[in-house]
Length: 152
Image 1: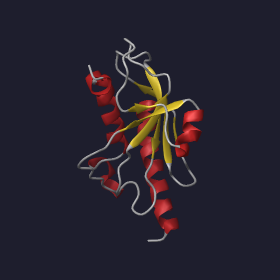
Image 2: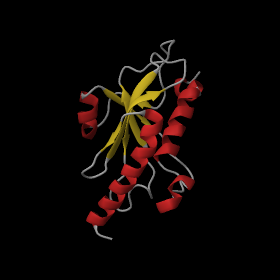
Image 3: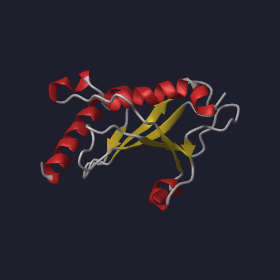
């Protein structure tokens, strides 16, 4: 498969997922040129944080193989996110290698979430397999269980 075809397939899938996700979250965007990121403007998080909504920017794996065969592992969010009690957040990085400079300079911090058992589906079966909806549901679950993030 040529790189151009892979990119077109990834972009087509991201467009479909954006339609589904916009119904749940409102404003969503994605990289329409190469499909390397996906953005949710107002992602609600559960009580126990210093905010009720955060921005979420998901790094979309690209290359061979890329998304959807390979799950996302990184997402970026508000640099100033804290628990409501001010506890430190595990797996939340506000510093990183120079390759992260662009996002860090824009005021983002990032989480690393490694998924096990990722099984995407395509075409008409898209919703029967893992996708960005699945990934965002995992992010929501992580924020509901603050013990995972705060070490409490």
